[in-house]
Amino acid sequence: LQLFGSLGFDPALGAYTSLPWVALTYYSISRHRLFDIQIAISRTLTVTLLLASAAAIHIGLFELLEPATGPTPAILISLSVIAFLVFGTPLRKKIDGLIGNAVMKDKYEYQEILRESVRAATTIQDLNELLNYIAVVTQKSLQAQKVCLFVKGGDGQYHIRSSRGVDQRTTDEYRIKDGMINWLMLTRQTFVKEEQELARKPDDFRSIYQDMGNIGAELVIPMFYQGNLLGMLTIGRKGNKEMYFQSDIDLLESFAGQTAVALENARLSEEAITDGLTGLYGHKHFKTRLQEEIERAKRYHHPLSLLIIDIDYFKQINDRHGHLAGDRILRELSIAWKEKIRLGDVLARYGGEEFAVILPETPELDALKTAEYLRAHTEGLEIGGIRVTISAGVGFFDGRDRDTDCEALINLADQALYSAKQAGRNRVTLA
Image (cartoon, rainbow, N blue to C red; front, side, top):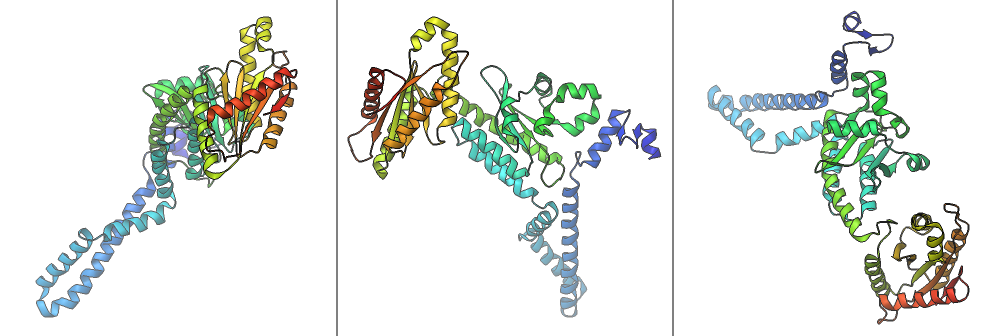
């Protein structure tokens, strides 16, 4: 304590009051950040066990052979056998693996999970599926208490698109602040909370870290693609209370770099098939998905329903309140409806103020109930002081007519929608 005190360490505070480099050096050694002591222990034990095995083999062979061959041939034969066992057989690797697994516990296992995940992530094209996959794998492999995945949105801000272990209300309202963004873009390094807290003055640290404690961020790993910060991965403490090794961080940085490529590919794919205003599938991709569902319905003779939804008097809303108000209505209805349908249902912007919902494995009466539920929910909304209503037509396919295609089902739902409008709007009609 006297030595640490002379270097600026205050035992009462448990921290260094001066000479940050001393604090960082002490931190690095105590937290195994400069080198992994476990790896050194593993290798030392491996060498020790190999030497002990070699000595035992040598003694046994020498005592067996020496009476018949003399000491020198016995030694040469013994050394030859030992060399063959060590270098010509998998003995060394076997011992290394056994010692490594015993010392490193589940460290090798989670590293292998992350490596496999990189390969799997490159095959996932759906952006939301990819983001969820990354969050789940990261939490599972590290046993982290909290994981958040931020992605840069169209507004230039970074939003939580996937998370594990974080309250939903927190993720909905949280926005990452400029301090952390600026630090990541300047350094292009992983932010380690404990390390930066020691290295920086309290005010400087708080200006960067800000309220990231709300999401339990111990590590913040940037995801760069061609110099562009696509997003970041924040990771909380490990569930088993173990610390993060430098090798952990190296592996996570590699994982983040590889998944950034997959993220960019998925983002470009999403842009190509989604509507820029609402974020829903566009007309072309909607028809592709509908035909796929029709073929699946035919194959398994499952029911399939389709909703075509139209916002009532939308042109008048645009004329009276302006196109910005109309755009806001389209966006907020898209969000509201997406939360009210099942995970396997497909919501798309059909065109203008018309939307479509594909309902796989859904009989006509259940589809009618879903459409009525959306209609009633919409009627109760107020968006920017404007109340809107919708009309909906329901088309149905029983999965048995081999000639039915996407155009035929759309035509059924369209006819039902026309009937709803003719009957006075703000209603649902079944074809």
